[in-house]
Length: 116
Image (cartoon, rainbow, N blue to C red; front, side, top):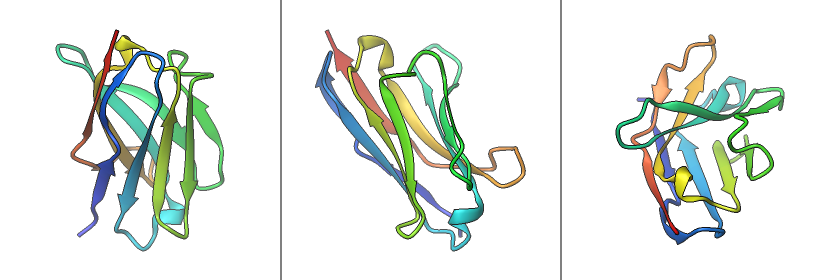
């Protein structure tokens, strides 16, 4: 079974930082594009950041300059470093993986709550 497990969420104050981690049990982790999405209550799930197997990175404009995505293929883990957090960043954050362009594998999510 392929599993994505997120961790690192929590309750923080505006301006604080968090680092999310997503551990992937798949042995082919290094061949996958990995991404972070988030979903706030009452809103659609939105793209946050993506990193390909080759290291190409793309961020949503809403987090550009504040968030950093990275991956450690040896540890089969993708990270999302979140700095300068805003209340608008409050959401459940999901890790996702694809090898085909469609995100076929998803984690269960980790809650990030940013108070003002």
